[in-house]
Amino acid sequence: NAEYMGDVPNMNQKRAWKLQEFVAHGSQVNCAHLGRKSGQVLATGGDDNSVNIWRISKANAIMNLTGHRSAVECVAFDQNEETLVSGSHGGGLKIWDLETQKAVRNHSGHNAKCSSVDFHVYGICFASGSLDTNVKIWDVRRKTCIQTYKGHTREVTLTRFSPDGRWLVSGGEDGVVKVWDLTAGRLVHDFSHDGPITALDFHPEHLVLASGSADRTVKFWDLGQFRLLSSTDVDATRIRAISFLREKQHAVLSATQEGIKAWSWTPSPHVNDSVDIGWRGIVDIYPSPTNPAQLIGAAFNQTFVSLWVVDLSLVQIPSQPRISLDDLSAIGSPPLPPASAASAA
Image (cartoon, rainbow, N blue to C red; front, side, top):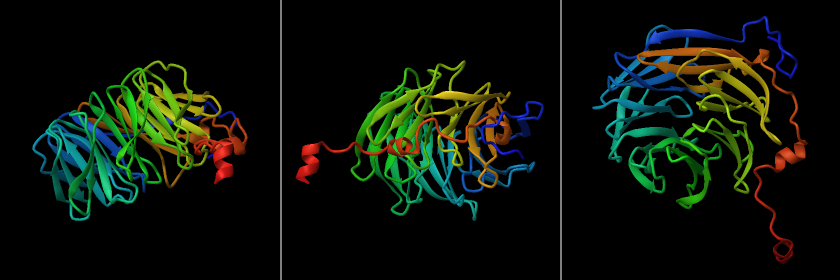
């Protein structure tokens, strides 16, 4: 593979392709989530009340997890891909031990559809968001809900823990991204879009959050100073997924129904390249942990799930940020105290 260092790619080479497509459930598929550790497993949930686990490039499901009494609306692996949490249309949640392939915990804390789930980086708890507008934190060891966050006015469509485990962010149909302090158990800040929140991703090192929306923009937020850093131009359709690149931390990928765009996000968003892909129903993208030059995408439509590969070595991604490294490192840092306070200290 060519190095993806900002050189103009050879457009005659195929930059994206469908790896496989298969019938994932006996009825409508509602969710799909890629495992972040290996990048080789996929979880799906459907109207048949079941969760299926797939190994990428294999034709048949490696696990079929049954027990929900209503449609499965959201799924998420833990960091080690040893445990999975699933949420249902009736509001119930199940934790699955993937070694024994059994449900080890049942929770019933939401009184409406559970729309989103995410595991804490250390696996000590998980979060759920619901049509009931609440966000809940569940302690895995104590087997109970330890916190309920209220404030969204419509369905909570996304929940994401920060890489350092300090914060949870939630995004809703109300167009609001809320930042919650897990230690203090309170709301820290609100950010807004002009449409429902459809995608969230944290920068792997800096205190920066990217949010995508049905308003067709991606916004970048400085979580050290709680300010808007920048916003992209309006895209053709809603943003469906976002992924910062670990290898190129000044770059970010955004996915729509039409394909992906590669952005430099500092100091202002700049499109370096775009790839047209017919991945209708794309819901999750993630750079392969074993091959950072490959992006894996998961999409679903009706009963079908499709997996896609984008060769990032053929996508024009700049090798250097468009601002100095010092300026880049200052982003996401807390504001300096006033001179008087600093001298008093």
